[in-house]
Image 1 (cartoon, rainbow, N blue to C red):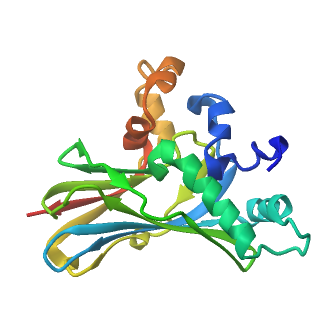
Image 2 (cartoon, rainbow, N blue to C red):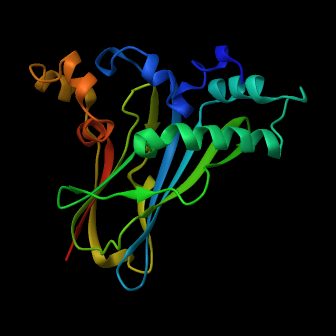
Length: 219
């Protein structure tokens, strides 16, 4: 991949986010419809956090131009794997845009496999599952948010049903989808959300403020 491709792929690789303007001044350049599934087991554990991102057609077309090495206007298995490998490595620094807390405490997750990439009906799709590093019971208040802290990519959950609980313990918790308004949050916190804040705050902290998230209340 040549150097001039980096800015175009920043929403995927989270690399141009490091070179882009401060998040307070940034606006999304790439848009994706997202889905999150919190997979549960019959014995009341969270087993996986499954993410699906479907990117807009304009950006998807630009990825074909950059990764279509054999110039057949398609992305074959090898080319898709190259995108997946690059994104997997690059998004690790940003926890794959996913934050997880239980009763306000951060929960560490890991990505057991590379991000899978496909191209369907003119749009690039990405699939991946995060696994809690420690046993994660469905107890207390669980919040799972998805957000690009560089604000280069907008990951949009169109319907509340696009953030779902699946598996053996579906009915164990009550659920609520929270959709923060970034402009409102920034306006309410202008004194603290300075450029220095964005330079010193971790991506997870910013995501907790601005991420669309699924909140579960579990007994």
